[in-house]
Image (cartoon, rainbow, N blue to C red; front, side):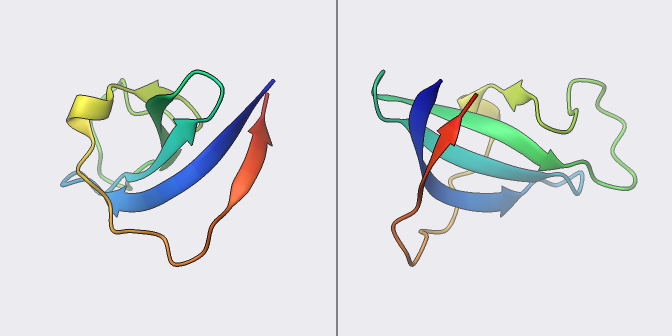
Length: 71
């Protein structure tokens, strides 16, 4: 289990919502599909799974500092 910091959310062109997080211990960014878009045909976009950070748009900054433990 590691500590992650929420960096922000973004909506992809296909309608999927992606959350971008920073893994504090490993000092790397990860992007999770939070919700799959209703018309998304990409089989790699599965809820609660990671996608390459390069495929996720740079999200808007988060107003509050949020940390959570990821399993």
